[in-house]
Length: 320
Image (tube, rainbow, N blue to C red):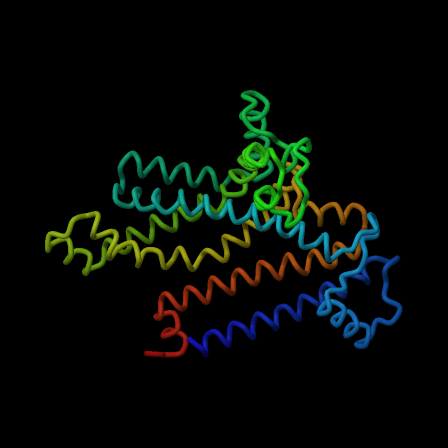
């Protein structure tokens, strides 16, 4: 495990280094921000500034980029975490039930719904949900993180955390108002990974249920519930965990559109705005942190997968 971890960590650091080169080179795409000294020395100065937390000042607002960066990242992490959590909570039981009832009407409905949901573009799904649940039924809010009347100070960027940290007399009402603002963005963002994870979980469960040790356990009279909980589910989770990093990357990419559509605070909407305003310091630092965060999550998923399923390391290094 140490050898595997070291290899992945070095690859992570190498990729981060390449990202710094890419973001440093972005300056040459903007004539008004070209570096006066495009040499190794200027790159090293840029790298030193990053390591010391000096991300510059926004060209449009005049605010410190570092402070704004962590607030916007906190908002995106909150939205992405809830969307991925929703995907897992729904996808795992639906995939298992569809596999246990293979070729039934329920199985066909789940597979069809998953394929349909995966093919719907994020921006179109967002508009459909807004028209139905916000405009027609007026159940949910469609813009921002919280009603401004609650006057919750922004500390972390994660609105639910900020509400709990505040000393507002209306904290309870503000919390549920923030949840109301979050329902539609979370559903939209969770749809694509949800539909893919359903299919992965179904196929993995079907493959495990066809194994000889499952047939032997069933022949010994083990109940279906114990069979799934003790033998099938732990092994069926392996392909799903392996895909979590990729699905999280897709989710983070869709967060760019989701935050813009629902006008939410987040690093995605912040980056899109910086492109329109040609705010180079924000664009440079935002891209670097956005990509680094995705790489970090993928690294953690890979390490957990290798720790939980040692055969991954055995296949690479013949470790027994």
